[in-house]
Image (tube, rainbow, N blue to C red; front, side, top):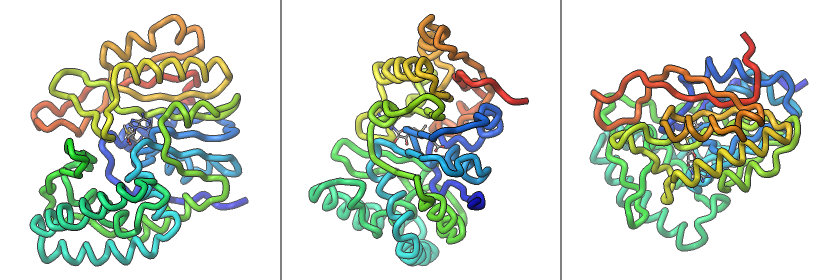
Length: 307
Ligand SMILES: C[S@@+](CC[C@H](N)C(=O)[O-])C[C@H]1O[C@@H](n2cnc3c(N)ncnc32)[C@H](O)[C@@H]1O
């Protein structure tokens, strides 16, 4: 039997689920026919499952609607040495130039090259290695692992304030590449509903959508140009209900916003076997440091926790 691959996320992604893993792990099902993760982000749950050998021999569908993110995954999968080479050069530049170098790469290299890629086809499959490396560089050195575009579609995340950021981690990139190269693992750029519709009885689906804002100030949902609306949250709930009714093993995380508690408290959700659990969590994405504090997150699932 192939060994488990001890890989970890290679991106710092806003809303990354590392801190919630101890809770999520208690719901990992004993048997997985196939695994789907339609809001991939940095893939904390995928890499955790892979590292625990829980995905052996089963088809895996990883997807996200952000083509830069998916493009970066594809290049790490297909040309990790090319990405490492480019990223090494960027790390050297950063050691010399710091924040000035960051803005030079963002505004004079990444955004123009990204615009050209967009004009050509904007397809994740054709994301250039140089863009993937630049995205990784900006992600490791920019503010809080944000991915944000301005109204003209330009990446506009400011430089972070890190003294000596770890920009190039070759081991981590190679391990992630190996996990993505396991036969049966597919990565695609798709909206969540198109991706999850194909789930069948016995499959395990982990949904980690952009969280519904808890209040006006916590309004962070810009991973993609389009954002994630209340209507999207409602469509996701309906999909989770349909899948649970089909015998799919569903695990979902979200904020404990009233609207979300109300959605998953509906009788359609409870009769499909979906239950809610509040989990205290510390959220890092808030521009006001004084508003970062322990808040409840919501875990919704039809799986029984294992103690
Ligand atoms: C909370 S993050 C996921 C974080 C991930 N679990 C991790 O550990 O890093 C939500 C992700 O959903 C993606 N997304 C937003 N709207 C989407 C949509 N309509 N369909 C699919 N993915 C979407 C974003 O690009 C973002 O990567």
